[in-house]
Image 1 (cartoon, rainbow, N blue to C red):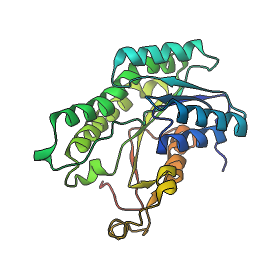
Image 2 (image 1 turned 90 degrees about the horizontal axis):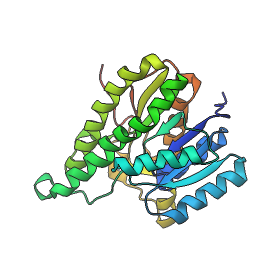
Image 3 (image 1 turned 30 degrees about the vertical axis):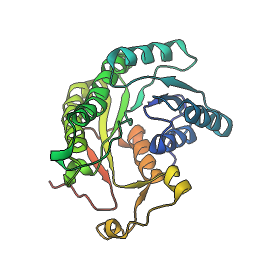
Length: 255
């Protein structure tokens, strides 16, 4: 089974980061043109852009934006419109603000706000700017990156879980609102994922974590990217509103 995305354009936020860059590469390998969003690491964004242009021959451009700010996301949309890329019908909200995990009583207010802004409001801003185009075309695929943490609610993750749980609610409502326009909205929820950054600095074997995973290993960025691309393809055209863990069985949502 080959996933074919030639002729389509994707926007990946946080596309220069560990997981984002792998999603970008996987999309390009399927023939999609890619708009790569970044916040501050222009060098990494350029590196990914140049790599997929050379290796896969797709169109790709980089775009800087603060995804927590609606005006900045408006500017992102206008810059894509003015570029050589088509407007994206494939959208992957992946970016998130990083912070130090601490017990709830020690977590500063700013981190709760940052997680709400980078999880919930990012998706709201992107939806406002790009879904009207998808509605007009009567076609769109949105895959939001959530996390196993939103299901497990483990200690020290309170702000992160709050943001991602809020995101889950927004995404489920959105799926019901836009379904009639041929737009699907789904979530992929990674576990503790190995990315290139960790490969370069040394992969943590994490035996205590792995012991809680039925498949007895940590997931990789490729595992996540494969699921994202599957949801962006026609093979899942009748699936929307789903929360799919890619956790090796560590998370098994009930029915």
